[in-house]
Amino acid sequence: MSDSDSDSNSDSLDSDLDSDADDAVNKTAAKANAVHVEATFRHMVDTVQIRSTAQTRAKVLNALNIPVPGKSPAPPGSLFTGIEAESNTLGTDGFLSFVRWAWREWALAAHTDAFHAAHLDCCGLATHIAPMTGIKGWGVAEPVHKSHFGSIDAFGKEYDVDLSNSQGWKLHSILLRPGDWFIMRPCTPHFALTLEDCICLGGHDYYSQTFPESAFGIFHVFAQSEWLTNTTHLEAIESRHRIIAHYHQEIITYQTGYEELLTLHGDVEREDGGHVISHLPNFNIVDDVIGFLYLHNLVQLGSILDFLRYNEAQRQEEQQVADSDDILDADCDYISDSMQEQYQDAKTRCNAILNWLVSHFQLALFNDKTAEEECPDGLAREERLSIMSHRFLVQQCGALVLEKWEAESRKIQGIVLYSFLLDMTCEAEYTQRKRPR
Image (cartoon, rainbow, N blue to C red; front, side, top):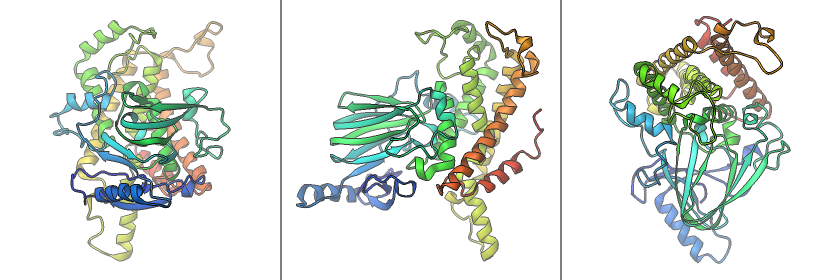
């Protein structure tokens, strides 16, 4: 058994584990995670026993995402924004309980030689991992510039799951032993090789300084999930909504306090990170504005990026064909009314933050050789940020459809099956909205 991927919270050995598997290193999209099994914790024990007694080639245990809430090492308080946002919004309108934690904290258990081909961690999440026993090898790809992962070609025909692609990425090898703790940015292609039987504790979250990379990961996986990742976490969507609620609370509701933070942290990037406002964007800094706009795009796209929306459409088609009353009878088949409301509330909060941003800041374009009035975009300084933010969302929609079309032409499946369906969904979503200039 390999690559067990679990969302179970039970301690029972017979509790189900949903799992994907890599029985061999496969180099085609269709076979990168070709074996799918349903497993239990007892199967894990049996696999260990087979491994210890077999005289011939034994099964290799490579169990992923074993839920261990409260057991993983706690991340630095200033690092993971999702946890901070949930703490600050708990009990407020629409957020009466914590997001389920099983997706956020997990364990890995693997035999020597267990290998997981290159992939992205899902949902644009940052990852941290710490071995408790044994040795884990981690292979990480780094682009020439971090923005290169934002290209629709980043995981195109030149990409391979063994990371032997010809895009000029730097490859880093990392050995993780007990006492080490590795934190990985979102949208980082990586593979894992177990060098000694090991157990690791780890987790996922969002970081306010890496939302561009989070968006890159979410968009790529949406278009090419079969090729790029091994699971998904619906809870991550609600985590993003709570981050927006936290931003809204701190920037809009407590505006005076936020303005004091802007003054305190200044408008110049510093090597010591003094310009960073923990768990909030510093709108004095262009990179933080861009990071917020990526998060804004994710929120505005909303359920367009939610696979349940396409499940629901498919099941409604089936209902029309079968004329059955029992279609859409399970939570996993449709977006609940409460989540639909949460999507809309997040959009409203996000728009309020954007309106605050464009009313308090202007975007000027100039350099040492060119005065602003000579810049060719034809936009006035006071309207540039608003117009460009709307154009950015439109551009993002177009890029998403194009990447899906290109993946479809290579017969790689994503969250939505067909690019034309994605195009129609975007058109339907934005038809009634005011068209940006």
